[in-house]
Image (cartoon, rainbow, N blue to C red; front, top):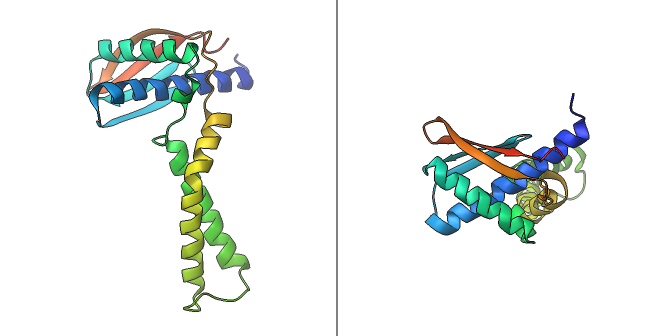
Length: 167
């Protein structure tokens, strides 16, 4: 059975490769509908491109990351940023509504204070989401990783199979 640490490392590596693959695809095609989700043995990618193109872009992304382009692992398009925005906004609103006993805003409304606190939290979430990606949800250490193949699961949903991420 896999240890949690090895499993987490594999997911983080494949998450970084997923981001880098998306960056390569977007550079090649421009704006397009695309989404991904990493797992311990590769990643899912939803995009209107052929499996051969996904494999080629994933291999290019891997080569670029292995040659030092670690920044490809971090993107403002990641769901981590959305999760951070939700978490921080909910925390800010809850804190203001639960513990706010100080002066009220110009309207005197607890709701308006919670709204302002939530908006400030959403603004702070973008740079924090990038930091969370960099230190927690991705790993640019792709030296042991290899892209094996891409297969179509259904329609535009593809599975990019990797090996070595568990090493």
